[in-house]
Length: 328
Image (cartoon, rainbow, N blue to C red; front, side, top):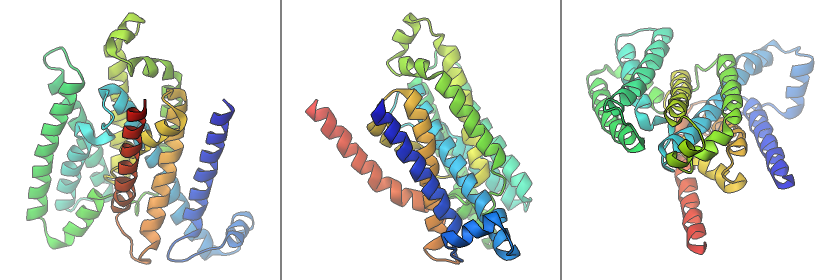
């Protein structure tokens, strides 16, 4: 227990450091003393606007989205009983991309692009669920296969939209598809959703622990497996849809973070869920800070940074997992 407390103190420190670094770093660097002076006295309108209206909302949005994707990854891995499952495996990113790119190609504004992305993500996810459960006996394999097939279809439609779109729209489309936090200036609802989902799933942590051991054992212990799985599915669909709507498609967060957390805190979900929320939020804040600062004042797609970090990290985690299995 003491060891767990130290781990969470470390995660709190990492989260705080990531947020602080995101606030002071960018095309205009600010030292810690200036930041403190700005927050306490605020006699500089220019810096105040830079921090309070541009960087702080962006950093908090990144933290919330990273947390939502990580917790969604944890829930998907339990739901599908597959360690390679991640939030987008059921087609939400493909559906959101098709809808958002169509809205962009018609020249619609940001509100309609966001609305289209949210609607497309939810429709795609529930379409996968509807097709997989049409036989009345749905399971992880049906969901995964249906999601993979529909994702291929969405990818083909996305490619066609890009091929026929005008050059002036393509850059914005590509940035959206690779993750873009440039317009993420309303973090409140994302933060509240993250807090609510973490609290709900922590309350259900015991059921998640049992379900991860198998449906038969969960049924024997009195859990209504189908009802519980539908609840997990709905929570994950909502969290993923809102994340995609806010910042576009950002990969590897929902895949790498749950694995990392399980290696650190074990498999009990009352620890895995809050730890994943903090580590995932921190990782996306760090990635976005790098995207803003590497080639400042130009910005890179944050999804490219998460992939560059996520690929080697996942390979390292995979090797450690294999070594752990072989030594057992």
